[in-house]
Image (tube, rainbow, N blue to C red; front, side, top):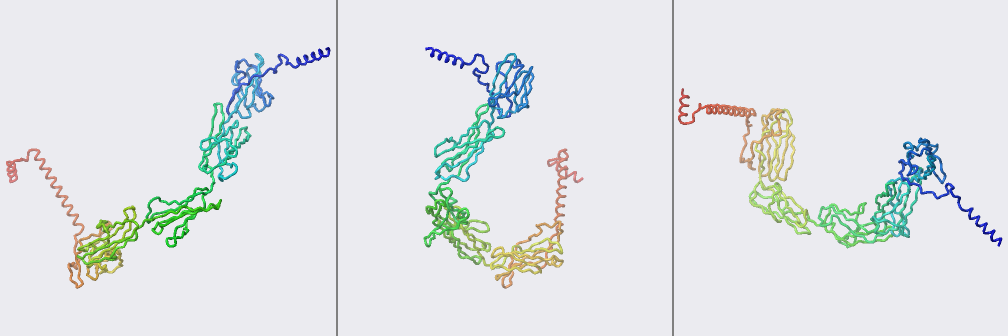
Length: 606
């Protein structure tokens, strides 16, 4: 029993020794530190106790606690502050006498506990937990440009998201088509890592890996960074990206542009399309109408068969063949019929119509087409529609009926599909001249061009009675223009020039008079026409009308000025006389009755 009593006493003494002594400083549970939140680069205000007047804290020591080790950083004595040497020496200051302690240019390294101890007026201790925040930069996303095959057995890298210079580490969320992605075994894997920069800020890198299907070929991916600031929670989104998705070809088909009805002359493109990515190697074939075999066509570097201009020979059956270079599978499209509507070259008979004056002609127009045709006849000079239908009847033909007639063959069901043919009708007759006589203003001893125009059937030949360099221009099969370059001499001024047009049916002439004029009065309208020619000479030399061989004397230009001056003077005299008569009438000097007239006569006789 004695042994038991001794053992119980020993245990009781041991329990008493294990109890903490009452009143030992630091042994009681410490209160939760005051939380102060601030952004990187700004200023943190540290108060030594929220419930005490700062002005009474005349003796305070400030400590920074790092890894449970306090380091003195600032002293306050009699309301005056003094920094201690070290990392905070140049960033601490006291805000007013006994005020809070200001820590400027806060960095992530400042996220720790700050401790203040005061001894007067009484001993107290206050802890502050400083929390630091920094918004990351805009997230940068890089897509896998090499692409992802749909038959991959494991998730492949889709894109990488990088958020730089944030604090603390932001959270990243991946989205596909606006919906958040979560980890999914063998389907979606998100791998994130971070780097601590020398500034203490974090750079986050997140890689999205996924197993994609064909339907993801147009999917839009982006990443979102979630972070916190003293003002609350925030987020930043990257741009959307689309990753190339590779899948085998299952179908090949043809596409023709433009869509709809085609006609000759159109720019037509035939291309192959497929539902695989990357697209297979294409070739285009056309059926030979003679053998029925499909013959490969020449396509451009883009794999397009270009028909320009489209012709009726391009009509036929086409098909496309696609060779998948990954699976080496060959696929054929459904054959497609291409129809190019056409109108063949228009034929007019007779091809060189001619007739005597007073005679008749019948012109016939023909053409082929795969569409119903309409015909119109137009006069080439005026564009006037003469007849609707393939036949044009011309009766009682006159000289003026010669010239061009155009047949237009068109397919009304297809706008713009038409062909035309021009034919010239010739009317037999001796030459007729554009002018009977002309006057040309020239300068002596200068080179000048004289022109003469004639028409007829057969086409006339023009000759000149003076020496010079002549050239001809055929206006149409029955009309010709001759130009003579001459030197203006006194002899040429005296005699003038004469051009003569002749064919097997007769002759005709035009006389050109030359008049001297100074360069200041020479204008483009100097060539004056004085009459139209109607004279012709028969093959037997009988002239229907003749021109005087001598040179006519034309009125001088100065005579026109004299007449204008005389007319102007007469008008002025009449105006003055009218004004005088009106003046006498208003003054009563001019009576208006019969007696007034007699009075005027008496006054006049006097």
